[in-house]
Image 1 (cartoon, rainbow, N blue to C red):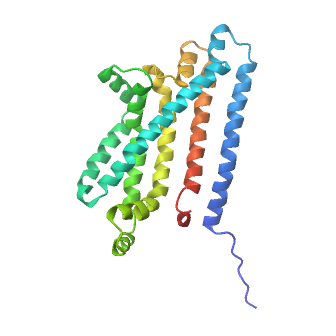
Image 2: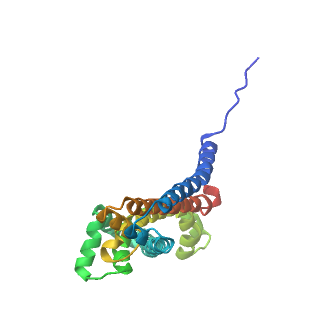
Image 3: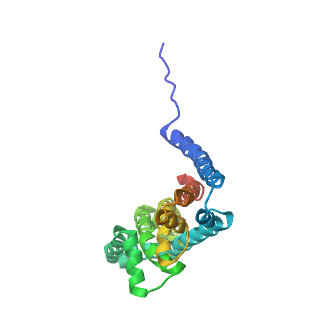
Length: 258
């Protein structure tokens, strides 16, 4: 008799199951972490200085300011990096791709605090936009690079076939190239989101608000509850946007590539 081998689930099925489990576990773990730290902080016998930072109004304001900075940065990154990535992958502009990517690489290679301080010294600006502009420059590279790589990775035969049935270059881009590049673009956007949330803690140095205010206050005044609360809220926000990025990667890409 010939034994019949029974194959288990393939690598793709195993990976899909692991990704699905992560989508459930990550937000639950984040809520437990943030909720636990908030319960701990509010249960302490806080002094007057700590009470000014650890109260519902202050925490909500700082978290909201931090989220606004991160979302504005992300919107600007998408509005700049995706069209620029499309532009430098066109045949007539491909020679500019190394220069554009090189400039974006300089932005991310430099320390984030350095980019922020240089912008402040050059403009003297303060407030939210004084943080948003340099953080946007710092966060451009992942989306720009992934847009370029994603579009360059589209099979030329598919593009030729689309043109062969009478599609215009713009229609080919919209209906063939961009949909196939979406998974990589979303992966870059996810990275940019996490970068924006992390670097937004530095907005405090230009009076931009955000959770960095709690971290800076806790450190300078040696108030551990304030420092820990601000740091954990920033970590929780980063984990949350990373989870949202994972959800987008899972459900917004072309069905055939999921």
